[in-house]
Amino acid sequence: MLSPRQIARALAGFGAAALIFLLIATIWIVRHRSAAKVLPAAAGMVPGTLLRAHNFHWTQMKAGERQWVLTAAEADYAADKTTLKLTDAVVTMDSSDGKPVVVNAPHADLTLNGNHVTRAYLTGGTVIHFGDYVLSTDSATFMPDDDKVEAPGLVTVVGDGLKVTGVGLSGHPKTRVFQLNTQVETVVTPKNDSEKSKQS
Image 1 (cartoon, rainbow, N blue to C red):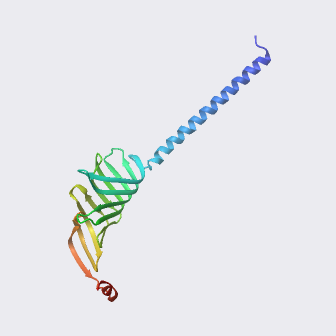
Image 2: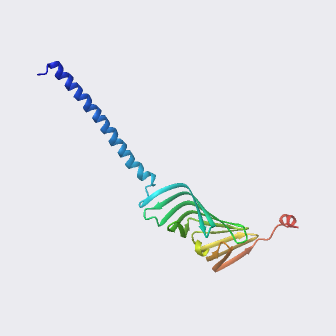
Image 3: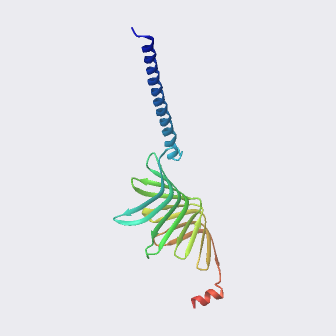
């Protein structure tokens, strides 16, 4: 038979153990709830996203040679691993004459075949720098395996005293050959005397 003092001690010990158990259970629940909230945030809250990467860098190789380099501020991999959405994308490649070709786009949707990019859809205002010329259009599609770029809308090309506009474009960045399809207009800007004297 336990004395009243022993019963009081037993109850106190049981209460302390229950309090410790309750504290541990509360910490466990809070941590797991936080992890459940952090996981979607890490994926950028984009439905179907598997992973979000910051300061993205991708080098496309073919037959042991570098085709082009792609960088982006952010990249969202789709859960099915067949598409990749980029923010502030920059594609850099060397043309056949060794001069760089740089493509900038605020948004890019890439189609993947394993670790190979088969198609890039560029939107939000695509700008292509090639040599002394700058080409700009709202959206463009780049097929790297064919070295082909297509743009359906209004295209403007500026450089070397020329401004050329047209609707629809097809071209090859590696060879720096581009063709405007329709409604082509060319404006020639005469070089001023200071520019002429610099060249003479």
